[in-house]
Image (cartoon, rainbow, N blue to C red; front, side, top):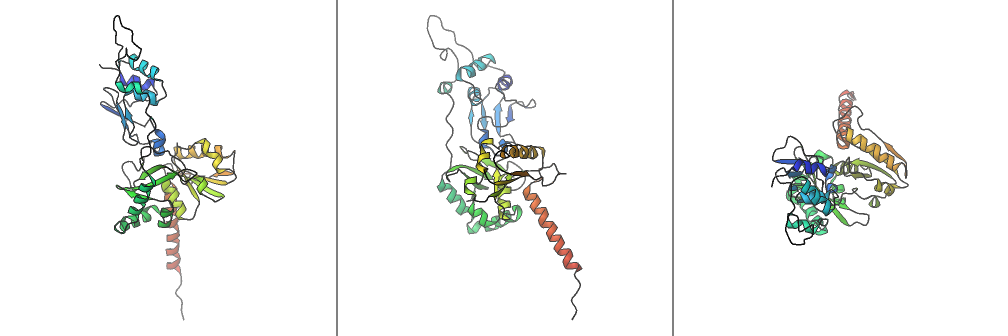
Length: 327
């Protein structure tokens, strides 16, 4: 049976790119909270022949029916849309009484309803094992390179329980009670997806505000900038991404003073305004633009690197212009 997969997905609010011919890449619609930056670089693939889909970032997958359920449709409306767009058909039997579900030619998995939220595929034991791997002697050179490039202090990395697993830096996410609720997997450098979330992760602020005693905190975009800021002694907390802020997080900062420093691009600046508007109801807040003339994603780590270069050049000029001391 050949149906209109594009029209079906458009009906459930998922627009498939027109240029795709066999498989279309879209942002994850099943579990966007499991992705840093709300899956800015699409990781979900939809087959244009039969409507099956899979997210290579969080591991969610299914058929067209499951896609409709993930977008909030009821089983009945999901099946109705499949019939409407030719992805299934009604069976006709004479002289028998059957339920609507039995009269539909649907994959058996359709009767089970939406899948339960996936359990986090990591434990505290994994976090400790990855942490030991990051600080093992044979990884000292790679660790030194990351610290130099990202301006990370090993002491801060230990405090945040960073680890190493299969070529990526692991970053635990914990709730207000210190329970492990997610793990981010970060790959420094350019090219490919830098940040992934382990399947079953619930994204949140890193570290959780309950674990930060300072009355003045800095909210930055992404854990890498947070780690760099903390390495310079700033009590920074990371927002998972420019689209990931949740208004329900604002009360966690009650009675504190908050400085918001997001990336220098349209998404980062819009997020900063949105965050500040939510925080204004519970605490004093200010927004700083690290480089008003830039719109290329210039971030806090870039800014710190620039400040270090300026300081280094100033020291070199001072040394070269200093008169020789004569006896």
